[in-house]
Image 1 (tube, helix red, strand yellow):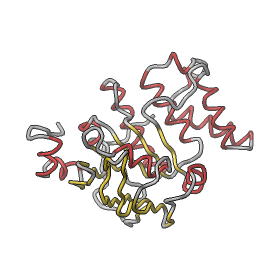
Image 2 (cartoon, helix red, strand yellow):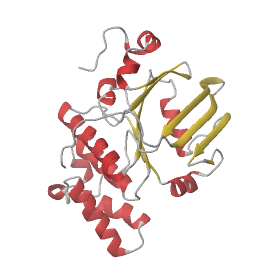
Image 3 (cartoon, one colour):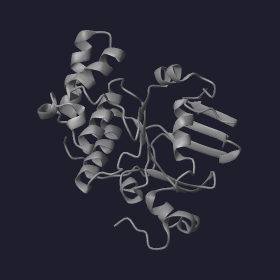
Image 4 (spheres, one colour):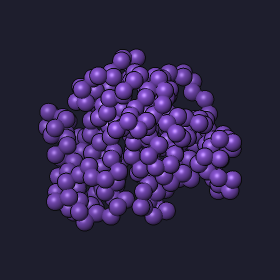
Length: 258
């Protein structure tokens, strides 16, 4: 995969939102997770979400994907209120892709068979299926791994495979749940490169949630910091790490990007 120079979009030529969460409140067993939260995500933006455990990052993913319905508020995608839209309809209509922290592949199938399985679900035409698989194999440099069972792949190779499987359906919105967890430095850099390539070449809007704050901030255009059910800071990586509330409630005084 060709290296793309690290960059962040400072301002969008056309600032056009693709996702909007409006006045969202969510409760789990009477415990409030999100409190009147408002969030906008622009087209072709890489947004990072940071915050302590249990602050609502995964809940936001569940709201966008349709796995969770808010107690109050609205979920708008491409200008359409989809708050009560079923999961399958939402994924197909808005071309959503979700890469979970765990799983997402069949361990006893080879890498190529995992790709074939997903392609047969989404692409009816055999020739188009083969073209898509060949493109992904080349794009992710899978040539030497095709016949290896998924359970024998490294952590980084498994993550690459799950991302590739998600791309079979040409998503326009990609949700990445803790993609950098438990990976070595070189593998994380490889995944950061993949994220930047997807934004640049596929024009995908990407939302990343991760506890590896430095790794996340090094590949996003904008970040939000969540605390007590609300967004306490939002802006460029440089802006959020210098934000007083973010320092007090999440980063601490010593955190930096270097």
